[in-house]
Amino acid sequence: MVRAGLVSLALMGLAAPLGAQQFDNFDGDSAFDDFQLDTGEGGDSGLTLSEDGGLVPDGGDGDIQLNLGTGSQGGFVGTPGLSGPVTSVSQPATEQGTIVTLRALDKMLGQPTDVELSMGQTVVFGRIAIRAIECRYPAADPSGDAFAHLEVLDLEGNSLFDGWMIASSPALNALEHSRYDVWVLRCAG
Image (spheres, rainbow, N blue to C red):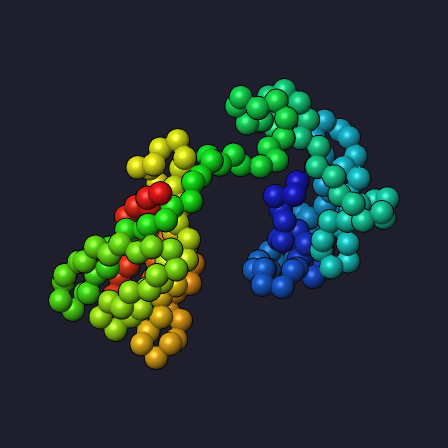
């Protein structure tokens, strides 16, 4: 049986894979001398043990194939409602907004401030500058989940954040700053 794994490989004199634990406390027990792979149902597995203890195909072509069988023994389960493979994820149509509403928090003062920015506009909040590059929202539901591309710089011009923030998941792609938090509330056309 393959369950004997590394124990049987060590007793057969074959090297175990690096990082594997070997058990050598059998004191000359020869129970594994005639180790064979158990293929179930009497068939040949087409696999043999290599000198380094790995499984290799008998044919030498280098390919090992997995046969899951059919019925209750195995098989693949498809995606419910789909007859073919999934090739893409559908995304609702979006509209491009002209104004984004952000909430900025100064953690030292504990004071949140709502900021409205037009695309391309920059506002200075404390010791950071926030610039709105692009804003989008679902076309079918304007009050739905907005997402905005923002750039946040410190006053020396070093980039602190440049990417997309999502209104429904502010922690997904957040500004990493010790004093300030910025997140998207909504986007309007």
